[in-house]
Length: 170
Image 1 (cartoon, rainbow, N blue to C red):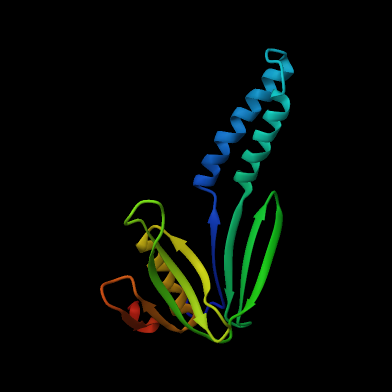
Image 2: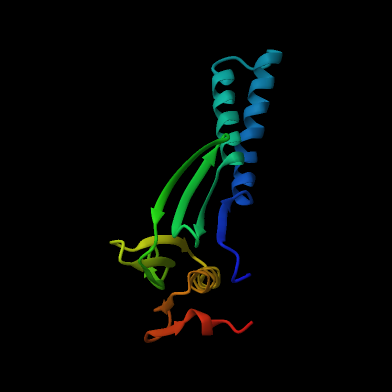
């Protein structure tokens, strides 16, 4: 990551969502086709259209965050079917990025790794929740380095704090 670059951007979507979309879209197309050809009676046209709509929605669903250092602003966005919604947050008072582990899920021992941005702007802003510690740690380190704030990692035994600039030697 280039330290002089004013924008830090990451997004979610695609991948498994596209695969999930296929499992809705294809049966929907088959139901509509069978209804049009007359080989199936009943509400299959409506059901097929619903499945097509859900499949296309999963295909097009995306979300992400954009951090702008020059404006001290974070933008959270999502889009589906080309419609985009965004919320802007002022992050001038950012003090640290926190990485922590929480017990979540129905089974004992299931953990979620949370990346949060903390500072003078009130309650912490949850940036990402992941079941994969490496993914969360990488994002937390990159974000702390980008914002030039402290990284506080409480996922290991005991608590360790490291300055973001010294957390990665590049």
